Image (cartoon, rainbow over all chains, first blue to last red):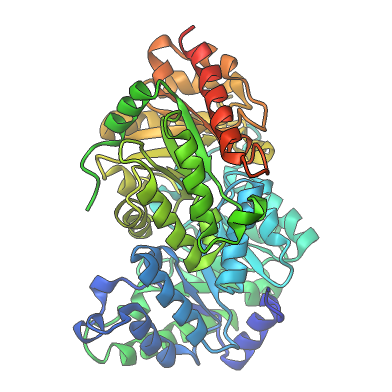
Amino acid sequence: MTNKISFIEKIKEAQKSNDSSLIVGLDIDETKIPDFIRRAKYPLFTFAQYIIEATANSVVAYKPNIAFYEAYGIRGLEQLHKIINFIPKNIPIILDAKRGDIGNTAKMYAKSIFEDFHADAVTLSPYMGDDSLIPFLEYENHYSFVLVLTSNESGSDYQLAELKDGSLLYTSVAKRMGELNRKYKNCGAVVGATKPEHFKAVASLMPDSYVLIPGIGAQGGSIEEVYKSCSKKQRDKYLFNVSRSIIYGSTLDDFNQTAKQKAEYYREEINKYRYE
Amino acid sequence: MTNKISFIEKIKEAQKSNDSSLIVGLDIDETKIPDFIRRAKYPLFTFAQYIIEATANSVVAYKPNIAFYEAYGIRGLEQLHKIINFIPKNIPIILDAKRGDIGNTAKMYAKSIFEDFHADAVTLSPYMGDDSLIPFLEYENHYSFVLVLTSNESGSDYQLAELKDGSLLYTSVAKRMGELNRKYKNCGAVVGATKPEHFKAVASLMPDSYVLIPGIGAQGGSIEEVYKSCSKKQRDKYLFNVSRSIIYGSTLDDFNQTAKQKAEYYREEINKYRYE
């Protein structure tokens, strides 16, 4: 069973009711959480409960990265299910999984992400081409953010490879994702804020897509630069993710108060330029 | 805890004792298995037991694709653990997961694959560059097969993009993986047998790497063409995967006998050219 309300509807509602384009990344590392929580029966879930209670009025979506739960085996994944259940129903969930495999395998991954975890959206890797993406796009109420230009330093290794016609590889990916979005209406991009000079190309090749933007917290990307590169109409489709700077803003027992303040700070920072 | 015997040692031993370069892919789809097994408490595990008992003397490694277990949620992953435990200790396990994420996340994925599942080797996607691969390569007794040129049709979408210097994108990946292998000694490639004209480039850019080769069963790639493209010294490092043609060779109750025959057939087909 797939979701009945579309990702896009949920995003629009949450963006309006919370006045926010901030995604909080739930990348919970047991070694970085306060001692009293680490001793709980479900430490990842308990920590997430505090974070979600503190930030649920400040976000447009939550984005758990599945690797952080897989690392703790079955126990970790059970906690991810609990976290997904705990997130208020009006807040969409993007499961950051960066999956990418051939068609019949991609179907299995899509089943896992959309039918077992009931995530509203997913992140995908494009290296294996259309085959590996389409089984996800066929879930019409769900959304797929495909890696176009990532925020990490070595993201440049291949994504910025110069092609024969002078364009860079990521623009080929963006162009194709723009086409897939015209057909399926649910194909977006991941583009890191650390490379703002490339946003213009993505904005023009994927004019109607949502863009998931990591890299503004600890990694230092500029919100202002990103918004400068897109049209006013696109601004509400640009969603900024912050993980560590919010959830590990403090290691003290009042970490949830710090998380609340940090989330409000980032929400305001984003809105400052979103409404400019 | 990581494995004590290296993947390379295990491969060499299994290749010798079973006289085989055949990997059997354990991509088990509940809808494709005989009825009497589908009704078992652990259908994926039960089916795998039959397949493993029938083929354990014919293979150099097993390769479960994790997507097929994730699709069945926690219950599926529990069965993957059971399967991994059931595989004879002398047969190495390649967990086909095609992971690829930034450094701190890649560490989490590596912990899941190598420490929770205890796989000997993994498959990885290179789109995010070195950052996303090195945390896996740092597990010295384990092995990573990085997607270079995949067997699916749309693998060409970006992998065959022509770069400014006239080379194709996958050769940049292969070149870098060859460098990483000189440093870490545990970096290999995935190259589909459906594109044999490209093996020569990979053989020369990654002279000392193991190569995982899908595409010879249902997909029709040629073993002969692949071996023609590499040196005699490299032949034992070229490992061929067959999944569906072996495990779903028959839907009757004697499917395990068919799997045994098919595995022996492919082992012999591979050896015919390996020893030529």
